[in-house]
Structures are given as C-alpha cells and as structure tokens.
Amino acid sequence: MPSRNILPFGRSHPSQHRDNKNRPSHLDDLTDLDTGHHLRHSTTMDFLHFGSKEKRHSGSAGHITPKNKGSPRIAPAKPARIEIQMESPPCVFYGGPHSSGALFSGQLKLIVTDPEARLLSISMDLKANAVTKKPVAKDCPECLSRTSTLKTWNFITEPTTYDHGSHQFPFSYLLPGHLPATTHCSLVNIDYGLEVKAVTALTDVITHHHPLRVQRALQPSPEKQSVRIFPPTNLTVNVIHAPIIHPIGSFLIQFRMNGVVEKQQNTQTRWRIKKLDWRIDEHTKNISPACPKHWNKVGGEGKGQQHEEMRNIGSDSLKKGWKTDFESVGGGQIELEFPASIRPGSHPVCDVESPTGLVVWHLLIVEIIVAEEHVKNLGQKHAVPTGSARVLRTQFKVLVTERGGLGISWDQEMPPMYEDVPASPPGYVTDYLGEELPTPPDEGLEQMVRD
Image (cartoon, rainbow, N blue to C red; front, side, top):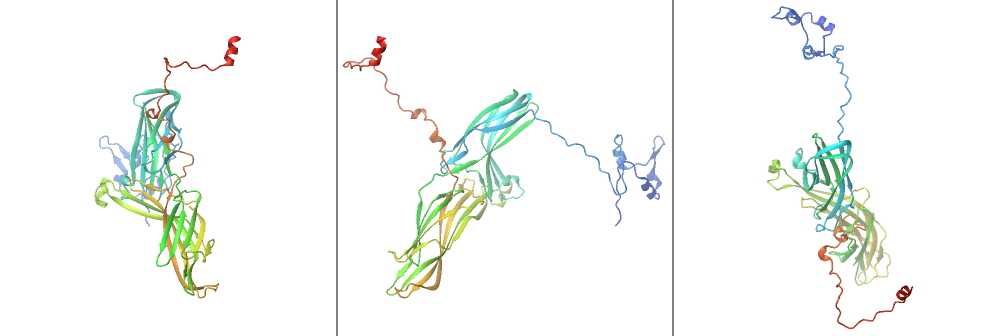
C-alpha cells in the first residue's frame, strides 16, 4: 500500500530532501521578482506559523509529535449562589381530581460570597414538565417534551446591592388539586420543579433548580363486595377485598364459592378447586401530541398517537389452604382467605388520570381451576373424577395510591375565615330597671378589708 504524504510541522526533515532530488527546481528555488533575492522553499505550515515564537519539531516520517495541552480552563467564580429551603410538609393531594390542592411554602436564600453583589433581577418559576418516551418524531425536541409555567415570582425588578451573607425571600403557592401527581412510567415522565434565575450587574446568570415531588393520597374506604356468576354451571363466587391498596403492605381477600354440589336422586356432581392464581396488572395509556411541524403525521392539529402498555406488578399461586364443605345448605361452599400485595421492587405507578392524555389504572385478576367429580352412591365417600375442568376468571378494579398517614388537607387545618367566626357575646347592660340582685357573700374579701 503506498504511503501517504504527511504534511510536517515546521521545517522539513533532511531525509525528505534526499527523497525529493528529482523534483523540479522551480519548486525548490524561488526568486523575489521585486528584489531579485533568492528565497528558500518552505512548506505551507511555515507560512502559517510565521512569526511564532514557539519552536516546533517534526518527528520521524509518518509520526507527528502532539502539542502539550495546558491546564483546563476554570470558569470564574460567581459572586453569589442560591438555595431553596422548604418549610411546608410534602405536597400531597388528599382525594381525587376534585381535591382542594396542596399548599407549600419556603424560603429562597441568596448567599453572597463576595463582599457585595449587585443584582439586576431575581425570578423563580414553578414549572411542570412532561417528557414523552414515545414521541411522534423521534428527534424533535418539541414533540419529546412539554413544559408549562404554573406560577412566577419576581423578587427583584430593579438593580439592588446586597452585602456579604445570606438574604431570604419567602414564597408560597397553592397547587391546584386537578394536576397529576409526579409520575415516572414506561410511557411518560411528569415532574415539577422550581427554576430560579438571577442576573448580576456584570451580566452573569446564576441559576438553581429545586425538584418538587407531588403526591396523591386517597382516603381509605370500606371493603368492596362483589359477586360473580359462571353459567352454565351453578357456581357463584363472592369476593370481599379492599378497593384501595398501597405500594407497600398487603391486603386480605376473602373468597367464597357456592353451588359446588348438584344433587340428583341417587348421585351427585360436585366441583373441587385444584388451583387458584391471582395477579395485579398495571395498565398505562398515553397520547403523545405532535408539534406544529409534525401535525401531518397524526392527521391534523390537536391529535396525537396513542400508546398502551401492560405489566405485572404482583402475583401468586395457591394449591391449598381452602376449606371445602359439600354438606352445607345451598349446594355446598368453599371458603378461602389469602393475602395479596404488590411485589417489592416493581416500582408501581399510582393511579393517574390526567387531562394531557395519561391514564394509569390497575386490575386484580383471579383465576380458579375447578375439576368435576361424580359420586354414584350417596353413601360412597370417594368421588370419581370425570375429567372435565373449567377455568373461572374474574377481575376487579383496584386503586393504587400513596398512604395518607396522619396528614389532612390544608383547608381542614387552617384557622377559620372572618365570615365563619360566630357573633361576639352580648355586651354589658348599664341601666338595669329590675330588682336588685343579692350579692353573694365573700368571706375572703371581708377578711382582706379588715386587715
């Protein structure tokens, strides 16, 4: 393979002159047309580095000695920094979308590290950011992310000088209860944060980001009772479970099956449970909106692409533990009580229903495998399997939410409003026209007067 011509840095190597003896002389010797003096041939890099005091050395043929890199450039220190200290409890919406919201407050701290700092403005924005993981256009930042500003604080609107030390700016805001909680799922991420921007007199920009986690907690409700019928059999399933569950902890499911025995004249047919499986599925649906540049991909303005996913966040299989009674009134019954929970480490997403198109819901699915048995004689204790089996499947909707704990909504712990204060007690009457009221004796007062 022929070697490539390498452009050396600085003066050419002597070996290169020996290799170039056959080159035309007009390329090696140049003459100034104005003065007539003979000029030495130099490479292109000689002209580029003409007048440079730094001496460059060329290495062997095919090798270039790299230039020593200097120390990394350090950004100049800014005259101040910003911190945010929250004073209110965590932001929790108590109740559904009609919640009264969550009230939060805090202090913005401006810490001046120089003897003094002159600032032109200090502003803070409360922003909600939604990042779609399956956008309409993969490389379009407008389709990927949507940001909304919920509140803006302007702490400084004119040039102000601050001395060395800490300076505080209080703030507070009531988050509307219809907003979705902070959500991280496989289709979209919804986050809230405080963005602070301060501009100094030297046009330096000081920024700070403080994440704000928003949660939703539903109050516990009574247990829900559901009845399922499975024709053409006479089997009836009665299930009692908690309608609201939490990411951590377990809940009990009470299960009772009736109509397991069908009696005839001299024989009877009955059903026996062989296996019971339960699982909790998490369903996520999101609509990815398109930016104005990509409306043609979704069919026009205001439309988007819908994506759905489902994953399992908890399951178990039971092969024993139930109580069977074929002699009870009403065709016999089978009773069972078992705990269920969300699998640790599955990172479940709480139920969400956002106007932006994100919906997250959960289903509790129970599958029972029953086998048919036949008893020829009523006095016979052992039944003969018929080989027939059925799979009974039923599902129940459950709500996954954070625990509310001892917290209550902000509107229930605030002092009463002015119009809610009852009327004042009646005033004293100065002119009494009735009979004179007797004065009760006070021995202690009489003793004090005597002394």
